[in-house]
Image (cartoon, rainbow, N blue to C red; front, side, top):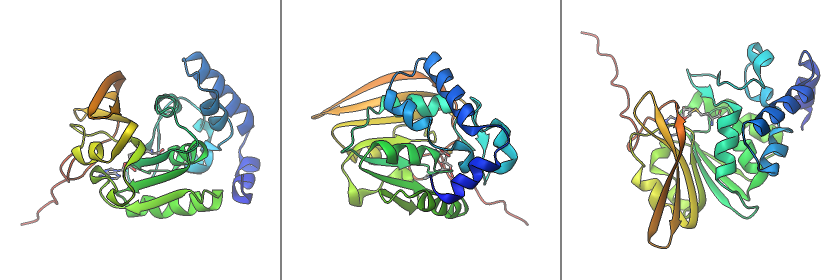
Length: 232
Ligand code: SAH
């Protein structure tokens, strides 16, 4: 925890440590078993990734607004996705949709290197500063369309998309290495299924985890960018 986070820890009304403990107990009751995931989520100050006006709900099990009309996913989904990725200390991870950087921080604690792509410059500016202050030298950030992946550092051991696409983006599949795990929500705009895809040699195994509802990834292999409004 850095000095900003320490300050936020003290400014929090009530006890963030206690709220985090309760959140972890709830995650356990909901079926999360990976102790490393539970330990990290019990330690990272989630409230530092959202605006102060939502601090009273920082550890509740629902999504919360961040800037640019986006949201930080609910803790259960974050825990489920992270657990499913079965991260190893040596893994190189590609994340699509940096958002607040909360999921990024969790990945950075459990893997070797995290390459994360965000489409919104506004979000990324705040998030970069936050991640840098928190001290994650193993996080590499890029502004751009993450549905195309980040070819330069591929193949990845793990890929995670924290926004939904209509289909599995072929570019991301191509960048998944041998033995790699890829978790993503894919489906229609309102409701999707959460998928785990594993690569074994030439074979791809696909398993459905649950129904879910994520914001869309807008991009070449995601949803089409919104048409600019025309004024006549
Ligand atoms: N994981 C984030 C929440 C992400 S919400 C967190 O913990 O806070 C989905 C994010 O995907 C938003 O920040 C949105 O701006 C971003 N996004 C949408 N389309 C994208 C694209 N094509 N490439 C990268 N990021 C994208």
